[in-house]
Image (cartoon, rainbow, N blue to C red):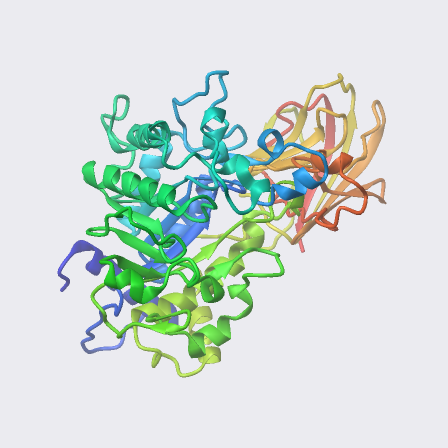
Length: 561
């Protein structure tokens, strides 16, 4: 029995996990099971690097498998190290990477769209994703981050860039003029596009979210300006019937201007910006998202919760936030959330794929869910916990690493192109071998050799080289060109973080990220943040062969390694 459908759903997860451990039988008896903390969350920054919807569905199914229920998606953000541009004679307002990942009608006077150009979710796709998550007991919390980290917004309205004195002068381009009524009006208008009924959908885009995040972290301007803004956006969400959530910042921004707290949730992310007892005493419901313990910046030299899973399992407690401890079971402590921030984007991007951080995400989920659901008495040791995790396996209907059940080679002698292959995509490790002849390579025209929703292998990119495009919209080039009018043996070797090309048995290049690398070309050679290595994981698309290839393919073989 369960008090609500979600409870019943969690029960089915337990049953499935029992069956995975002892196939064909379930132990007799009764069990009583309920979570210690109501909010068990994960925050993913989909703004600084793009994530395809299919990946978010794998995230949702995996969260459900571990009985996590709160998926916070950061919809807009930007490259934060604008000083790299300023110090090298560039203008970050024009050049820094920024993205707002939702379809929006908003445009600047000069026609600049709010919506990201590389990858975005349509309103319909996003509402469908929210409903999909609901079926799995997961609530999606979308975040629009203003007045800081708001380069997507300042580009619409350059007149609303913050004018007052501030720390981090070189980052001014991303700061909105917080207390200006026009700024509050702009931000409210953007929220209303999703909080009010959408004419096409017949309901609000965020109707099923319930909670919306108003961001408001790391504003480097005046504290009263900040408080005025925070109060306005929180009040706006409350007025529209949503529960607002905000990044805790009021310890750094104390002042006279009141900021609403009743019915407001707060992420306690950094004790310098907001102290736990202060937040609770001011009336906020709080979520432990402490950066020192729970932040991950993939592949960076800082914020690496993923390197401390054992330490967390053994020592972390949800009610200790930084150096403060709230009573266990305090009614205002909702739970905890870990966070993945893609700081290393733009000119620092090493090319990592959503695939490359899957282990980081799922390996943090199993630890945190265990700590938030029950007492740490479950398996005694971290090693026993991990044995249990591997015995229950991946969440049902997920194959995040694109492995084939049978590691049999796949062979084709194509009759005519294009040809449907209809095989599932294949993740590393693999070797693709093809004999082909390119008959023509008109300048500036792409030619697709293999395609699927997961990506495209390009025999000819716009610049004439061999390369590929992934479903996260990142493009890579091997730097080599196929000969025209000559039969050639092409081999692609896919490994985690590295994809290589061989032509007639000779190495012809490792993939290099195209999206951002051109930008850093005119930075000095000693620019120390330039990526030393490009991670070029490519999931091999095997749905269709030769959809726009001008030439012949004589033979193709795919070998899982």
